Image 1: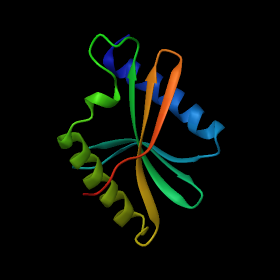
Image 2: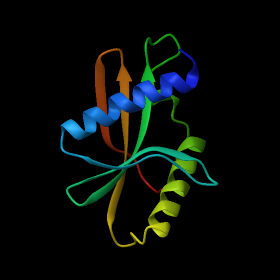
Image 3: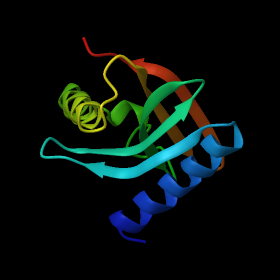
Length: 115
């Protein structure tokens, strides 16, 4: 399985998980000039920007450990562009991480903020 296939595998698994707990998926793999957001969803009238990290093993550390400050900055800028493009100013939003390790799913709500 190459990197693209692994990414799709973990993102599809994350989508199924989010939908199973009541999230409505609005967009997958949203791209801007700043970067990409894996999943954009909505729950309880909150827009949730989700970074998906998956690992089959922990040989190279956990998925959530691989989210750097640079990556967070790209996600935030991309999210702000999505908000502007879709006239969602004034709407509540947050940034979550869904980390998958084997058959385990870890959902970190409010994993990081705009600051």
